[in-house]
Amino acid sequence: MATRSRATKVAAAMLILPLLLGCGCCEGPAVVLDSILGGDRDTFTDQDVIGDWSSDCGGSVSIRGDGTATVKDLPIREEHVKGAVDDVEVKTGGEFTWKIFAATADTDQEVRFQPKERGGEEFSAHAERTWGGFEHLEYYKNTPSDPVYCVLSR
Image (tube, rainbow, N blue to C red; front, side, top):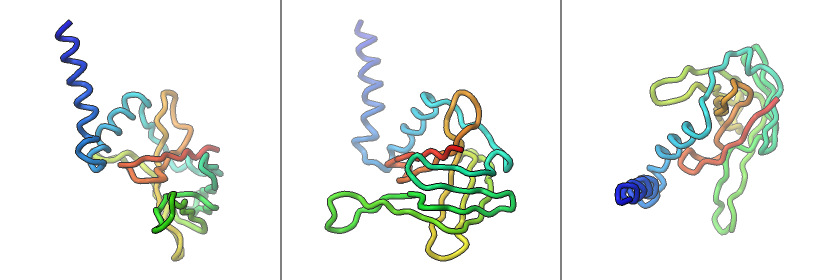
């Protein structure tokens, strides 16, 4: 019984310690738990991402085979505006170029979107964690240390 109680305390400390140290180090445990509980990120090809996608956070992305994409009202982050009680959602739109970047030891495979003109904001998406193969793209609306995920579906 004492061993079980000690193991429970150690596990709780491992989960709570990053929170006590500040959000900068929260990303590691969150990513580990996400990968354990959320399945794997499947790989994808150009042909897998070409098409029309809608975000569950609002907005859409039309990805074309020529390396271009049209983005409409896609929420990509939230900002805190001085004097405002809540964060303000920031959306992007317009014409973009896109390219798939391979996974590395530190990052998952992702498709990166670059605005063709000033005013749009760069963003990237990766395969949603699943147990059944590639279906959706997922992107952070907020930072990885304070994650708000949005899912792009066909």
